[in-house]
Image 1 (tube, rainbow over the protein chains, first blue to last red):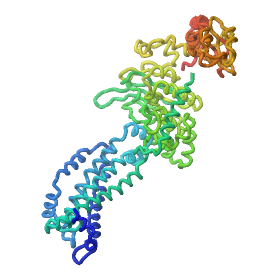
Image 2 (cartoon, rainbow over the protein chains, first blue to last red; image 1 turned 60 degrees about the vertical axis):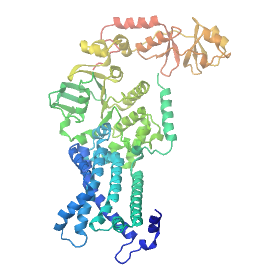
Image 3 (cartoon, each protein chain N blue to C red; image 1 turned 60 degrees about the horizontal axis):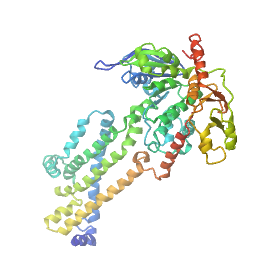
Length: 252
Length: 378
């Protein structure tokens, strides 16, 4: 552990050397692979989840997506690398990047899809009934009522997708890409355990920072009426007192 | 006016929820749909704003077939209040009330100031405007639900058991305020309830539905109590019909007697001098009855003056222009055996004995049928 600390604090590791990128560069790579995967997954799963939750049709899709979680990531990556990469004639990293991103996207879809769908479905039927009864169109009900109420679940789905993808993006290094996985695989090959441990610490730190950022977003974006963060207590007490006073003055 | 023309709702599978319903809900009045569960009352209500589409028949609002307007536009012109309020949990009370005006394109500031007016109109303090629904009690939520339905000032309101989910004390309060509000606003209201007492209290017309969605009887509350059309309606309307019907019999020219009183704060000795049959009525400085003082109460009092804590509060009060039911109840509940009658402001007019109340009732029943008091039959 102290060796890992030495490795982490060694200024040499934080600078790009000839042929060996430094920690900031690899963190950037790792972040790029992860965010790209989460973004693609969200673009696919979020609208799909809203649609399935709102219409109540297509729930088997959610079940199927959850089943994808059972696929072994590394095995799938190797399979895709063997099957897909020969057909990609792009220059640079494309033959390695495509299988990696597919694997990560498949990992990020289930939590985003499942939570979005569940969030919309869990909206109180009385609230939906009242919204329709007041004259909202289906679209208005979805975006003005169901989505704001589902937001905490949607965002927690996104957070768990981010955590999983950031932790798993280390496999990029297995097919020769960068990212923090580099330190794990290189460290393993060279039996440099300090480097391995340091890499693991970096992955965990990155995941925690991103989760913290999203928690902040969640706090800001979700209505207090949904999250239950009403601020101070006196308001609540005031409601009780007002109600009690109302009860006391029952007309004869 | 809302008209149901031979409206039927049959679900796939053959269940008939509403069977050839013909009904008129007159303009500016409260029409109550009442019946046991499974009688199709909620389905009937929901066919007015096309939350449920009739299988056959038409629903007309002021002569226009509802099937002709797009559902969303139709619903924006109809107030809608449901049992569990259905407030939007992510919006403040004020924005909840402003929902329909905002859907209709009213600008936010105007919608909010209108919402603020309505908040006070339904008896809530402006301090609640910035709260969220989860911070309100059930009764407060229902008030907000009513305010929300009124926000776009729709001529027609649909109310589906709006007061069923609150406790009896709050329910009575909400019912009273609802009647007061309706007196001011004169909306055309269709109101669904399973509670016959609520129907009788609120309805100008009551439509009793039986299981299978068939209309059993439409009548004014007094008519329903006096002449249930068949055994089903009679059983549904329930016991104490005769007594409850007195609630619709107005009192005219009351033969009340003068009642000796003492004021709060007067000497107990004065009170003792004025005892009549062991009791004396205590009033406040404005002559409003506060309660009865008994001989024992006067003897055991800790102070030498008449104070509130020595009073017996058992008697109810009848108002001069109230109903025979109120009058009889006042006479029967009074510890002194003398029912207290007040004027509209709550000031004492006099008292009445149970035997006088019964005589008034007898005079009424010997009068020709359809006599005063049941004049609201439509």
